[in-house]
Every structure is written in structure tokens, then in C-alpha cells.
Image 1 (cartoon, rainbow, N blue to C red):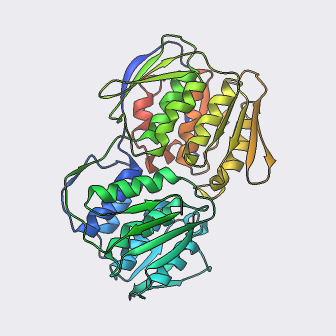
Image 2: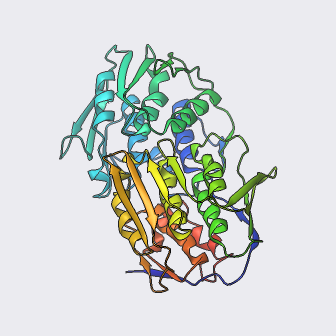
Image 3: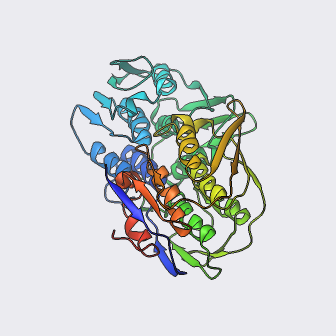
Length: 411
């Protein structure tokens, strides 16, 4: 097993971090641009393995599309290959083939996709056999499982002969990601009309336009640097995160609000955000429905700072790269944290013992990039070891190189 030792940071820092590009924006832009038949008009695409996998598979004529562990890539390409009539086998890692996709497949089938399950019903691998429009322009889809299903359907909707009226049923999670999809579609010339009161989105049949499009830096990746400032023992600790926009499409930009309660002030500088320390509050309650990828980051900070945290809207964490609820419960316990479910599938309470973190603590990462990056900022308060640190390549390959600006490691 590969391990990375992070020694406790012994001095303050004032530095700049050139953040990676947004994986979420990149993957949507790649699908939309492919539907527009654009070439060489996208810039600042993410270095993340998920995005590089998307680019490779879009350019490939192979009959088998192996997405590795990229959930977004699996879902978006299943819709893209279906509507463009390509015959493909969609597969991935064993964990990827345990992540449900039945809701998306049912939706695509109702629109005219011919899709077979190769092994277990409702899960990859899939066999895509082509597309014959069914004439159905009205579609209902659940909103409480994965917003990526909705985004996948929306992006192909303009290519349907009669367009699409999409009705979202039940509670809607990760709404900002759907709004991101809609805004990017509009950037490429598509008329999209969301009616959030009635939970419908109307997309007429139309053609995407090829435009120059630059990707913003990644707010999910930015969240770990907020943790660095929050956990620093030095009052003059300061970071400037480069490439972030003041008015972002990314829902995870809400980290500025969350971390203002946990001891970090953020100010827009024109080229990004400057982070400085401020007093933290004594407790926090937050609904992560629209920003589930931030939950691990916030849990680690709250535990290390001994701030009781009430979490809601985290149901989707159980079907991510790993069962993130279980992973958090297990690893937070190593640093004195207790994450307890107080209402089934709805509310969790995080409390901490307040004891110092042991210097020989090793964090298991569960093949999950966000586990590695969320726990790495603990180096601001204690020696820490991260197991299998290379998992960060999924979204932020340069993370350890960047963290070496603060932590005394070789990266």
C-alpha cells in the first residue's frame, strides 16, 4: 500500500494556488461541443482523469467505452452515444458497475434508445444498440437520486425531433448542477426554459452553435484550501486561489458561505479569491442537498475545530465513489469525530471529542479522491498519513504538488 506522510505545518503561509479547471464544467462542455460538432474551440479543460477519459472516449471508435471510475462520464456518454446512434458497450471499474444507472436507462429507452444490461439489471455494463426516436417528447424523471441523469437527458434534448418537456418528480438534489448544465447549453445557443415552480424544463428541437468556450477553475478543488486556512494555527495565514469567478456556475462556490462560519473570510480580487482567518462560530447546521461534494471537507474541519455540525441532504453520499457516509464515520472516528444518523436518510450529527489528533493517524481513502483531499488539511494541526494518495488524479492530479507549497513534503 502506498502512503504519503504529511508532517505538521510549523509556520504560517501567504501564497497563491493556481487551481485546476472545473471537471463539472469541462465534462458538460465536451458533450455539448461534440453535439455541436465543434473542434478546438474549448480552452482550459480540466486535467482531471475523468475529463481526460471523456476526451479519449469521445475521440475513439472502439466498440467498448471503459469509463474507469468516472460516474459523470458514464452517464453523459451513455446519453450521448445513444442519441447519436452509436453502438457501444459501456463499462468501468467494479465499483462503477455497482453504481445504479437504471433511472437514466429507463428515460433513454422511453425516448427511443435500444439499451441492454449485460449483467445485473439497473447497473453497468450496458450494451447500446442504437436509437430510434419514439415520438415521446414528454418525460418524467426522479430528481432525488442523481442530478447527472437530468443533465445527461437535457444535453441531448435539442437533438430530439420534437424537443423535450422534462418533468422532475420528487425532491430535487444538486439543483445548481442542473442550472450549470442549462447555462452552458444557453452559451452554445440553445433555448432552455426551466419552470421551477412546476418542476418542468422545456427544450425545443434546435441546433447547438460552435463557440469559443473557456472553463472556469474548480470550486470543489478550492474547498480544500479553505480548510487549510480554517485549520491553520497562525492568524496571518493567507491564500489567494486563482482562476475563480465572482459569479460562478458551480454550486460548490457556496463553500465561501459555509467556511465563513468555520473561520475563513473570502474576498474576490479580480483574479480569484483571497482567504484569511476570522473567528469561527460555535456550531453549524447545513443542508448539503445542492453541494454534496463539500460534505467531507466540512466534516473534517468541524471535527478538527471541535465545532458540532448538523448535516442534512447527504443521502447521495452513499452511492458515490464509495459509501462516503461509512467512510466518514470510520475515518472521523480516528481523529475524535462521531457522525451519527439522527433521522433515517435525512439528518446526521457530527460531534468531536476535542482531543489532540494522534501523530500516527493514517487515513484510508477508499479509492475516493475526495477522502484524500478532505483529510489532507489535517496536516495543519498534526502529523498525518494519507493512504493511496494517488486517488487524487480523478479530479485534481496536481493536488500534492500544490500542497507542497504549505506542507513540507516531496510531491
